[in-house]
Structures are given as C-alpha cells and as structure tokens.
Length: 347
Ligand code: 5AD
Ligand code: FES
Image (tube, rainbow, N blue to C red; front, side, top):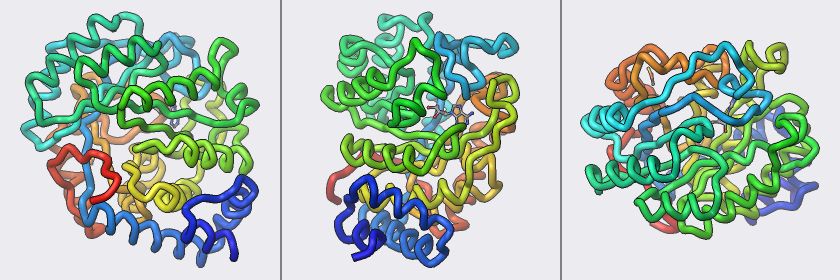
C-alpha cells in the first residue's frame, strides 16, 4: 500500500513514510486526496462548526530570546506593554458579548505575572464566566506552577514545541533553552489534565523535510488535543530578517495530514496563515482546520504584540473581527459558533 493510503487507513506512519509523504507536497492529486479525507473527518467529528477563541495578548515582555520572535528579550526596539487585571477583564466582557466562550491568555514569559497574580486572574475569569473555557499560552513553567493554574480553573494550555529535532532547535534558540524541557512541559501539562496544544512553524530557518517528519512523529506520540501550525514569517528586528517566509501550500498540506493523524484534533487556521495569504484562513478551513483565533486585545496594544512582520487584524475592533471572521467562515461553507468547543474523543 502506498503512504497516502496507509495514512488514510491507519492514521499512523513511520518516520521514513512521513518523509516520503512530505515529498509529495507538490503532487496535486495527493494534496487533493488528503484534503478531501481531512474534510471528511472534520465533518464527521465536528460537522460544519468552526470554533472561535478570543485571544488576549496580555504582555509582550519576555525573558527568552528565541531568534525568530519579534518580542524576544534582545529586541531593544520593541515597545513593551502589560495589561492590568482590569484591562484583561474588560477584554473578556467585550468578548463574551460578542459570543466568545473560550478566552486565551497569551503572553511572553514575563516574570512580572507571578503564580500568585496568574492564579488570581484565572480564578476571577472562571468565576465570572463559568460557562467559558480558559486557555493559557504563557510558556515553560514548573510542574507546581502548571498545577496551581489548573487548580485555579485553567482548562487548556498552548505550548508549541517549535521543532522536535535537537539540531534544528539549536538553530532557533539560544543555549539556555532546551527542547527536552519543552517536551517535558507538554507531558506534564497532559498529566495534569489540561487539553494541550503543541505545534511548530512551517518553513522556519534551517527546517528540513526530515525535521518536519520528526514534528509529525512527535505529535503522533504526544497526541495533543490541539495543534497550532503556521508559516514562519520573518521579523525585521531579528537575525532572521532576511530569511524567506514559510510556504502557505506546505502549511495547508500539513494541516490535512495532521487532521488525518489526529481526527478529533482542534486545529486552528492561524493568523500567520492569514498574514501570508489574504484567503489563508479560509483555505485552512477548507483543508481540515476547524478553529479560528481572532484578537480580543485592546486595539492600542495590538501592533506591539509583533511576533512577525505585517501581522493582520491589528487595527480592527474585536466586534469587526468577529463579523469579518463570521463572513469569512461562511464563505467556505462553515458556521462560526458561540461554544466552548472542547476536544471530544467521540461525538
Ligand atoms: N513567524 C511565525 N510564527 C512565529 N511565532 C513566533 N515568531 C514567529 C514568526 N516570526 C510563533 C511561535 C510561537 C507562537 C506564539 O508564534 O511558534 O509559539
Ligand atoms: Fe480580524 Fe478579519 S478577523 S478583521
């Protein structure tokens, strides 16, 4: 049996088979066959629904120095900001009115937000919005910290692994960071009962087909409930400023593969995809994605949360984003729903 049929039948492949599959990314028949199967699975498991998450980018301070990222510690030109608890809560009020039932608190690794502060913010949001899910995306912490956030009411955690290959990880991160620790964090989050999201950039500097195959193997092993992938986009204040952006087509191909590997996965059509291609998010939904994550952050801070250049949706009001996305989702035959959108093993 060929690798395409094997993926469709078994949902699991070996590393060498993923390499073979990834080399077929420009074979339009294969691309279409995998997209069809991905869409069939997403419809079987989630119907026509697209879930939405209100993204609150609450701090762009970060103690890390990842080479690709515009808000890394070493970028002296980044204008830094932090939202107060009241500002965060105001984002939630706005978001709830607009129909969001998941809030994502995302930020750099900012020591200002101690565990005590985070637990207070998490507890307050969950008390005010018991019908909403709360997702954290705040980087690598200790098991005890993750446990405290979980006990305070956090439901989900996003921590992209970025790359599953040690040599490639070293090309993207300074020595003080470690892939082993990142993987350890993901397993601990799972053990604590979070719905967990891993993921990686497509076309990050130095990335090979073998690296991508390892990323897929890692996802296959971890079995995360969510997977975030988007094309790498250079940021002008990083050492990768002159590197080419990742490929939209490869990202779409990987979305289909990931949907087939993990048929119930919550899979966003990311902002990075929408940044490189004006129809990127719609195209993502058409090949297996089932989540969109618009910005709920205060308009005055949106441009400052600049992970990469030319990020979209930095000028719109949250209400405009909601309306815009509802129309975009409908344009490809899906429906944006006001639900928590939890991971379900079987519906
Ligand atoms: N291009 C695309 N994605 C990026 N991220 C960080 N920097 C970039 C970039 N230059 C992604 C990382 C991170 C997520 C929040 O944003 O994968 O985990
Ligand atoms: Fe933000 Fe379209 S989703 S303006």
